[in-house]
Length: 221
Image (cartoon, rainbow, N blue to C red; front, side, top):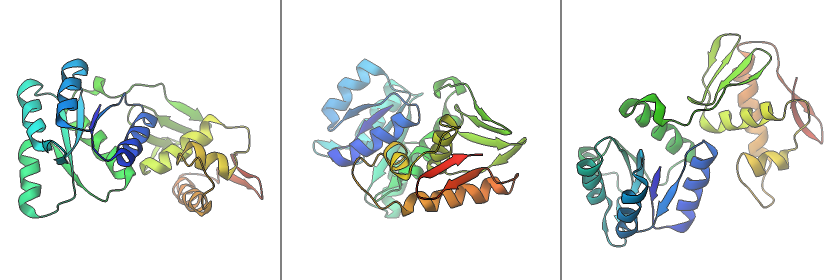
């Protein structure tokens, strides 16, 4: 996976999220750097900012189409005018407007890869299981008692961390650090909000699964 973005903070967020979801990520801040990386790593997918310091990211998209036609290309753009969108789709497989939600980026890249490439380009991992719960680490899908649960990427990441730590109580601070990658104190209400989302969605498919230890954290029943 190649990420071409000249804003270091955005590039870092994208890289961390994509690596967390199983992708091998290389980053570049300019067209020149990206071209060198393309020759070396031959990426299965490229996430490319349209406005780069040394040119238009769509130029790289056209070059990828010629040299590596199987590479999926998704553009990041701060412009949402119809002409800009059409221009991006003429060259790439999808586009995402800034500001974006990181969950959307991960989900859209996964969707593009499933459309454009064989399944073997997606990271493959054995499924995670806990009771009647199964998490598919290749497709990022969740089933409970054989029925599908429709989770967002963040909900999936939160549930995966709880499953991997089944049998012990996980604190809000630990969840913020490992799921949201917050290394400094942050508002823990985001954890409470996403726990409530998970409880509702999983509760539609079976008995309560996530328990709270007041003042300590959460664990799977």
